[in-house]
Every structure is written in C-alpha cells, then in structure tokens.
Image (cartoon, rainbow, N blue to C red; front, top):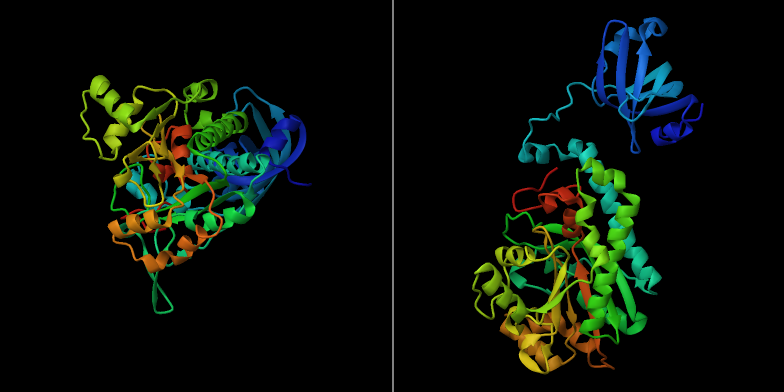
Amino acid sequence: MKFSSISEAINKGKGKVAVRGWIYRERGSNKFKFLSLRDSTEIIQIILDRKNFEKQWKEIDSLQIEASVEIVGEIKKDSRAPTGYEIKANQIKIIGLSDKFPITKDLNEELLGDRRHLWIRSRKMTSIMKIRSTVMQSFRDYFREQGFYEFQTPIIIPGGAEEGPTMFELNYYEKKMYLAQTWQLYAEAAMYGLEKIYGIAPTFRAEKSRTSRHLSEFWMAEMEVAWIGLDELINYAEDMTKYIIKKVLKNNKKELEILGRDSKKLTPALKKKFPRITYDDALKLLKTKKKLKVPWGKDLRTIEEEKLMELYDTPIFVTHYPKEAMAFYKPKDKNNPKVSRCFDMLGPEGSGELIGGSERDIDVDELKKSLKSQGEKLEDYKYYFDINKYGAIPHAGFGLGPERLIRWICGLNSVREAIAFPRTMTRYSP
C-alpha cells in the first residue's frame, strides 16, 4: 500500500491505511500491545493483537519509545483514543530500534540542552518549529505582496554596524574579519537599485548576556525601502506584525494548543492600533505609573521595558531615542538634534524589543563623526560613505528578531526555546 501521513489517515476515517512513524508512547499486556505512533502531522493509537502476530510478538513486546515502525491496518473512530481514532494493525514492520530513549520528564533545561538533538523531536519543540516556519514564511509573503525583492548580503564583513565590542572576529586568509551583525549597510547599497528589499539571514552578537532575551547566534528578518520616513516605516512594521500573527492564528491553532498558549492574548494585537510614544513619554510613564526614574539619555534596559509593557496588551512603538545612545547610522531629528529618528517596537509579556528601525543618515560628515566617537576605523566604512556620495535619498529600514517574536507568540520562557539549536555564552553544542 501507499503510505499516508497520520493526519491523512485520520481524515480518511475508515478503511485500510498504511502509516509510519515513531513510537510516542507504549503499553500493553500479554495479549495486546498499544502504541501511540507519531509522525510530523499527528499522533494515533495502534492496537496489535498477539494472536495475529505470534511470530513477531517477542519483537513487538520489546518495542520502546522512539522506535520507528511501519503499520498497515484498519482505521476506525474511537472516542477513547487520544486523537479520536485508532488503527487495528494487521501488519507491522520494525524499521529502527530504540533503547532507553534519554529524554524523560524530570530533565532540567540544561540537560535538555545537552540532548537538544533528541529533544527537538518532542511535541513541544515540533510545535514551536512549525510556528517558526509560519513566521518566517509570513515575513517573506508580506513583503512579496508589498512589491519587495528578496536580497542576500555577506556574512563575513570587514567592519561593524551596531557595536564593535560585540563582534565575533575570525581569521580570513590571515586577515582580521568579522561575522555580520546585520545586513543593513550592504542592503542600503542595493536599495539604490532595487528600492524595496527584504532578507532573512543569521546574525552574530558577542554579547556577554545570560538573559532569556539574548542569543549569540540568531536570525534577523530585515527590510530597507527608498523614499520613506519614520512614520511610514512604523506603518510597515505594524502591518507586517499583524500579518504574521494572523497567519499563525490561522495555520497553527493546534500547535498553540499543544504549547498551552492562550491565543486570546494575541488577538488585541490584531484588533488595536499599536500605541506610538516617544522616549520622553516612556520616561514619564515609568516615573508616574511605575515609580521608576530613568535618567534622560540612558537607553531602556530589560527591567524598564518590562515595567513599561505592563501598561499595554499590544506591542508599542517607542520613538526618538537619545542620539548619543544610538548606532551611528541613525540620524538626528532636525527639530531636536539630541534625539534620533528611530524606533523600537516592544512586545507584551516581557518579550522586549521585537523590532528596531530608523531612518538612515545620509550626511557623510555626520556618519564619520559618529563612527569616530565610537572608536571605529573609518577605512572599514569607505564603501558605505560612497553609497551616500551619489544621489543620496531619504530611506529607512528595520530589523525583526524572529526568535523574540516567536517567544511572545508561543508564550515561551526564553528565546532559547524559539530556535532549533541555540548558541549562547555557554551553549555551543550540540
């Protein structure tokens, strides 16, 4: 017979089916063996009657969790079964044995990290990875529908973009080079030809942080677009976020249920407009509503962002941060040179900064001045200065941290759960 997925077999509902997968649970007696069989789509109960498998019974009776098998049998509805259906097997073929699968309920996060290559098979991790797939594809779909082109940039670069001290250095044919922190500087070059671009790529930050919001290697979903300013950029960020959430709620209802995520906590983000406040507004709210005084000029830390977000049930945009605390490419506001024309989109439930974006500074002298103040080598940015020498135009872009967005959507404790194989200060294997 032709094999079908378990979900296809369930949809068929009755008759002869052939399925294959891995044993999720097993129990039995001297007369019957009950297997819960999983594949990437669903779980179903398999019943094996000893009288039909006398020659294979010793093998069948010794099957353990995560052994792989092929089953042929009759499927029927049964309300007592975990997913409402069961298959009474008349054939079984054992493909791969499993002996004492080393994932148990009593493992802590560190031990699960050591066995991530096996833990990734779990229903929890599988559900997260399915939602992650939806998030990544939805990002692409949104910008495709908006007339953007996908664009790729180098991972190995001569200089930085965010903070020099957080760059990973590597030996590139005896020359010192670095792993990219963002695609932005090269994307700006391409923007002058394509005008509207997006990309998804791995990103590397050597931040000595052990928080639930930081990874050393993660992914960035970024966009760059010509002829727009800060307000229009924020519109893109809000529309894109709503688009992604809508897709997840449509396509991953079952996965959210497996994770125990209350999807109602996501619906305000679809129904409401995301508030837009300035950095100054944020400081006032923290002082008056949360009794937290933050000196002007200081970037908002995790504790301040979390306290601020206790006031909201949707993401919010905080704009016009102090120029001195921002990356060199974020321009001064003409009406107030002390602040930059930039934004962070903060997420509810302690998810922190989900998106960061800004207009781009096209004043080469200002760019050089900012880079010098940060101790950067100007020669590493010669190509970037050239971009703004020939027909510079207003443009802007942002970067979305998919792991942080996935963490919020799924209601996870840490971004480490939102990526298949996390890399941190202390975690570099498997």
